[in-house]
Amino acid sequence: MTSELNTSTLDELEAAASEKFAWKWDAISIANQPCKLAVAADPDSMLIEACERQDAGEEGVIDPFWATTWRAAAGLDRFLDQIDLKDAPVLELGCGTGHAGIAAMLRGANVTLTDGVEDPLLLVRMSVSQLPEQYREKCKVQRLRFGIDTIDDQSFPIILGSDVTYLRQLWPELDVCLRQHLTAGGQVLLSDPFRFIANEFREWIQKHGWHYTEHKVELADDPKHPIRVMQLRL
Image 1 (cartoon, rainbow, N blue to C red):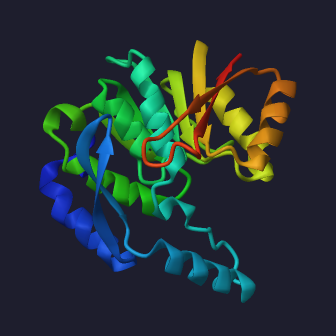
Image 2: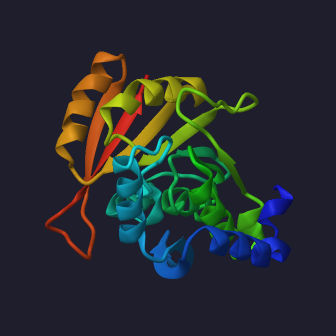
Image 3: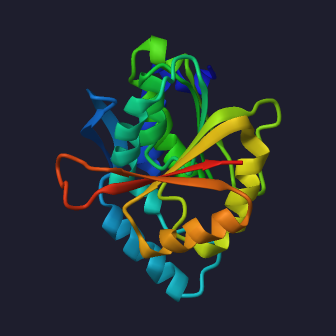
């Protein structure tokens, strides 16, 4: 595990996050146990600011959809109850607050949490840093942009992604990233709240050679709005 995740650096991580944006600790259940996640304090204001900067013509502004924990992550968390993750290498793509990857780690997996931008990774490092040492030792956090970056020395039998299919233009890069990092015979688990665009993704990904199985996960807080888990295999 890298030194940036050591408990002794938590104060430094908190200070670095505070220089960039307002954040808070969010009490949440992960892997059926109480946890804390570092999240942005006002994600709506961050999104409005990003939109205003984009409207003003500023280039390179990224929508901060990572700033909150989406229900799709909770659905994927619950789905992982069905999988034996003990010591399994797991990769989470577009981790945002890290809910799904941390859920796998708490179930015994060795997890690499990744996102395409640095700000959410700072929050994820904070969240992991306050976990017991036996979990911190099973975690890596690093930047990974679909179709651009690779983890050259490792492949993964399980790849997770929560709400990573909402932009059509990302699908080809996501396809490349999955093929680069999935172990032969492995599986990809992608979750979403039954968005219409994910229905399109379902058809698109099957045309690109993936075997698709769909699962429905009901959450206790809102059983009328289930989460879809898309299981992909080559």
